[in-house]
Every structure is written in C-alpha cells, then in structure tokens.
Length: 254
Image (cartoon, rainbow, N blue to C red; front, top):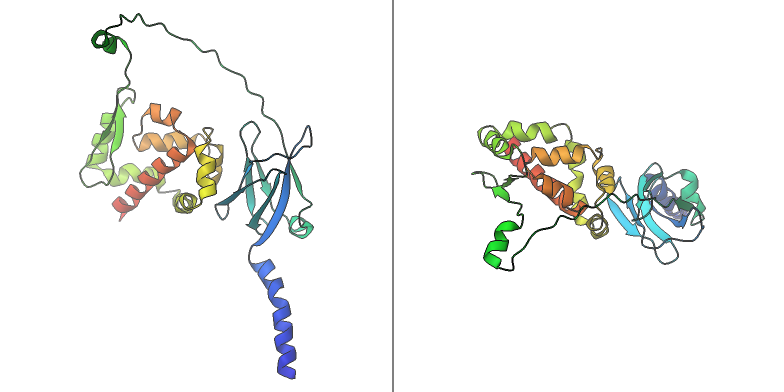
C-alpha cells in the first residue's frame, strides 16, 4: 500500500514537471489592431526552437513553447512583431490576443527605358541588356563563388579565397557560430521554409539567425554572391546560400 501511494504521487507530479521543465502547447489569436478582426495565414515561428506554424481562418494558432521563448509573428502587409512568452500566457490557455498593425507602403518611381528594336533577332539580341553572373569553381571546395560584371571585385575575392580560403570565411562566420548552427534546424521545418519562400524583407531571416538585416548582404558579399542575387532572391534562397557558404567554412576550418 505504501509503495502504491508513493507511485500515485509520482504520477501526479509528472505533468507538472513536464510543463515547467519542457515546452507545452500554447495558443493565441492574431487580430488586426484597427478592425479587431482575425488574420489568417500569419506565420508564427518560435525563434528558440526554430519551429513554426500558421494561423487558421479564425486567426488562431498553437505552438510548442515555454516561458521566455520568443515568437516571431509576420505576414505580408503587416509589421512583424516579436512576442515573449510569459507565465501568464501559458496559464491563459487560448485567451491571448496578438494585434498586428498594417504596414503603409510608399511605391517608388519606376522608370521604363525604351529600346529601339528592329524585329530581327540577331540584331535585337545585341541591343537588349544582358546581366552576366558567373559561378567560379574553386578546387577543393564543394560549391562555387558567384561573380560577374555586376559584382565589383568578385574576381579579386575569388582569388583571395583560393590563396587563403580559411581566413576568407572565418571573418564571416567565426563569431556567429551559435547563430549559424540554427540553419540546419531552419531547413528541416517546412513551415519556416514556406514562410521564407514568400518573403523578401530579410526580417524573419535576421530574427532567426540572430543578426541584423544589414549583416545579411555583407555575409553574402563575403561569400561572393552578386548584387543581383542579393537584391532579387527571396529569403529562402538567401538562407540556402548562407547555409551553403557556412558548410564550406566548417570544412575549411577543420
């Protein structure tokens, strides 16, 4: 009988320890702060676990988290926010509402240049502008480096990488190893990948990597990616590019 009582109390305490020591499922509703209406399709990513989810048609979501985890909430057309998970939130069980503010966009002036085409393909092909970007293959590295006439100094950086590749990449990733280790987890989660595939603002990517938005172009330049790629690629392509460069760094650093 005594052993039964001890076992009974142990079983009762297991949910408590599980909730306090690990992550539990929390929920909330995302609403428009002006209309108070729910917003569907919002990407919610736990930065600490690099796991994500999306709100349903009622603006509701559920995600595994614990106290002091940070959630990154974003959707096109609204200002992204970071929300810290509190103990009260964990206890509320679905009564939490997160308001998002619509983002005002100012469209820049677009200039359309005119090309005097003749109708003859052989001639018009020479008149139309062509942006040449190249990937240089470096012996000993699993991937190449992007250059071209739109990437000033690309060939010089490639040459420096050939003669001193370890130092070339160490300055980029040496002080950000803990942040860059998240890349593998980011690539595993389909919700995170889908969210990044629709974004071009670098906000979510910067939050997940723990770097500033300004550092992302600098990292890609150090990895010899062209300005065309840096400006036009979506966040998922940027993440894969940084991940590939980081894998090269780890091989060379050994």
